[in-house]
Image 1 (tube, one colour):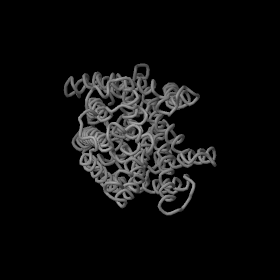
Image 2 (image 1 turned 30 degrees about the vertical axis):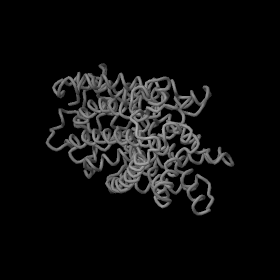
Image 3 (image 1 turned 60 degrees about the vertical axis):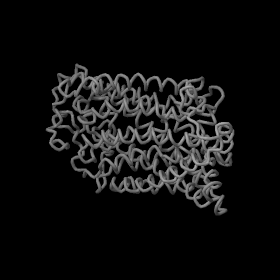
Image 4 (image 1 turned 60 degrees about the horizontal axis):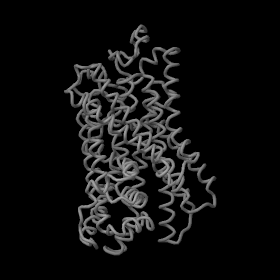
Length: 513
């Protein structure tokens, strides 16, 4: 039976694997989960300062508006498809039903790797930030990996509990982050040592050599917005909740980051912005608040910087766990990954993601024993999150193409050429261009002056699982045809019983029955 109220199987393409999972999430909850993954204070203190320092371009605020427009166009097709495909595997299910099952399995492994890289990489920055805060404020010196291990344990507990518990925790933290950043913005515009100028919003400040690096850094600020569909099986009225949450998140993120980065340029002063950002890094925000608002506010902001990272960790953890669940349910990965807790959360997937986080943290801790204090930031955080962002941009470009294929094969579902063809086609081209810019500027993102082994190893971590997934799916088509037919369809009614004679045709051409 369909899990979408009143949808009558959504013409046979809605996945129904989580009928036992209670629907608890509304638009606000899903939006908070998305924005939490984007980590507002982390983007301002870490991402914006780094972008100004590395690129030396003043047009960073405009880049957020442009990227927001690109992702809004992507979201048109993405949201249209989410009304008909409700699956915790999101990208995986969309590509399997819009392009082909082998492509879907390949995309699923790229998504798993990308989300894991993003999630585990953030632990590096979290560990450094917490250990530094404890040392500066309380004189307690502990290795960076100690707070990481504690955090992994807390995230693991939330991961196997009710998803709305995670949403409430993240909602409270994100609200406080927004408050601090708004205070920073208001004071920055009020202080404005060189006056309030609109130059950071002018095209002439952005479209110069180096624009590729700005867009490459900027796209990472939006990572997580595409995760709305992952919660489709736990959302109330997903056909309405998911599109609304996606549009809301993109709009809020784009405008908020544009205004905040503009405020940083104005509050610091354009003439000295790049030098100060390069020397102070994330401390630029906290030093500014300390000097103009008070040390207490600055201290609160530093604590919220830590909780901002924590919120992103919980959000990405939830995304990874649901991918594992979806792939285990369809037997593309071991079936035990389908296990859920008594709260309906993907318990097995959550525990596997926790294990991965522990293993990678231990590896970096051993490799960096006695190294520079910034080691977890310069390696674990920088390497893994940039590779993860690269993978997610590639996935969004592929999903845009899948939307076109999905509605071309199911013309009766399309609501018009704009959402079914034009918007996703434009999204595919624009995101492919952004992906190309990331590849071209990958050395810059890693803080390197010339290519090294990492320049090839990290992209390979994204691409090779995708190739392996395609090969694995083709093997399943030959050896386990019934299982192959279920790929990308959850436990949708009739998925197991699709006649074997369909196997000789491209599966995406065959609507589910």
